[in-house]
Image (tube, rainbow, N blue to C red; front, side):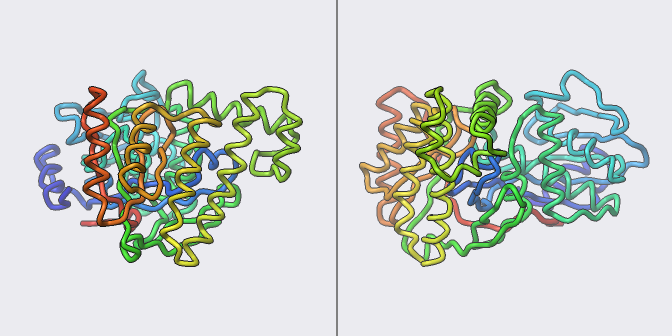
Length: 381
């Protein structure tokens, strides 16, 4: 994803030069899954892979949208008119259009944009938030609109909630905009406060390997929304604002008659504890001890939150047998990716073991990505 090449492609598509190129990374959530919309804690970091947007201003309120990943497809929307059957659900253009509509209220004008990405879509690495954040930076800078990054993350989240129909929390957009190279972001999703936590697995002789299971997930589907509704119902029954406020887990479980709600509460409460424990390990330099936290998170997501999928479970199990220290599914669930913590000397063996396990089952070959904490969204040209 070369900025100069994207600029040249923009010139070819629009017959004029772009005024800049902005790039936003995908994210890998080290731990803290489905805690964000429960006002809890998360610990993501930015990936080297992401989404770039080349853009130039227009003199009107139109937003022209093209993508190199959807050659021959062009969408034009009027930022003063929210309309169109494609403008919700699963159409890729709903993400940048939604950002444009939300930011129109802050004074952004029309623009022509061209999108490129080296982040796999549907892999649970937040390609959607990366697209939203790159678009948001571009539109704001082109129009001279200054918005603090934490607030811009909230606006990008609103675009996804209202115009795409995904009831996501604030984590993905915050990670894309706020993360720093060599750090994970400890984010309190209630207050919006965050802290940079040093994280360098390579210094400990370890590598985080992302396994794209090739089972694509679609977050606008009903299961994601159902999990959020179940958490909200459990909070209502327990008389708390959000599950983050549950302090007595045993008492809460005893007060819930519905076994499904009990499982959801158990995951969210214990996952918040795992985030705090993981931050403590990182600050103590005990990176090698993270494996147990990752595996405990996966078991909870599989058994209590019930959002794992066969390819994820097999990837974690095969990796562990081949020497990984731990691993878990990442993202919203029902497809996407797994992350495993692996000693450098065993990376090849772990990847071979996972690929063999997939081949034995007749599944598509997994894709492996090395994950190192990278810089957040920025202008690159």
